Image (cartoon, rainbow, N blue to C red; front, side, top):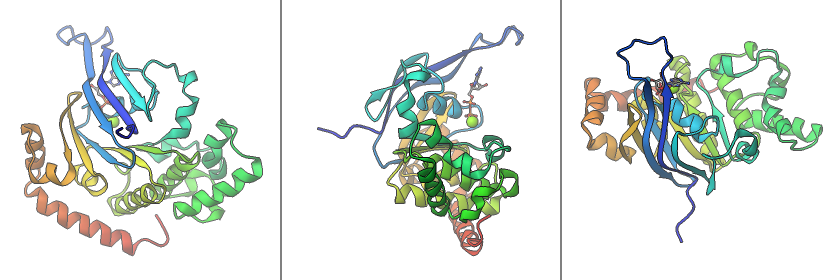
Length: 286
Ligand SMILES: Nc1ncnc2c1ncn2[C@@H]1O[C@H](COP(=O)(O)OP(=O)(O)O)[C@@H](O)[C@H]1O
Ligand SMILES: [Mg+2]
């Protein structure tokens, strides 16, 4: 028997109706996600790359049960979610957690870090107050933050540190799957490599399945084993990362790769430079 995929999507579509106020010439329906079929294996690091508006965030919302597909099926660890209302998906929050692009708007400014990180545990009624306190310190340590951070508020931290806090919160219920939507796009270039390395580390350390979305090919290349190229709601090409970069099959993938002159060399150079910079700035984390 083959292993149950961590995530399985079969012919998934999500259409949106345009508001009445839009131009008369515009089509009445936006096909934000079209006919996406893919199995993602446990422990796989799957990247989705595409330009702004290609449907990446819409697809992730479907994967997280925050929205339902217009048609098609989605199973997470073998359990269907596409036909379930959010209230029936409590189990999903223990299996799959999200990290968003902008840590400033995704962290409640009025909450202390300890309550932010413990929130998923409280929501699921996991552990006593004392156990949750200990778990928060453990999680902060896992993302390279000092225990004292627990008593502070999000605005007291830099963008990179806030994204570390988001990762700690996502790890709190010990999920099997981490889903990240452009997790470093809002960060300064100098701290991107650090946060990417952190995601790399926690995925390795906790044996997670990763679904990682970015518009930036170099970022996806850095963290993923396999990449889907998304265009106008469709996966136009899915291939192991190195194969996609070395031998892109679809004309659109080829044009993405060609859009930046000598991207291959630039990527290799940039990844090395980012890593070196990340290592230099490793303590204290930014
Ligand atoms: N709630 C919504 N209502 C109407 N259109 C939407 C909605 N969400 C997304 N869209 C449209 O779906 C398309 C894909 O958007 P999105 O998934 O946000 O792309 P990406 O994350 O790749 O930038 C865009 O045309 C966007 O305008
Ligand atoms: Mg998006």
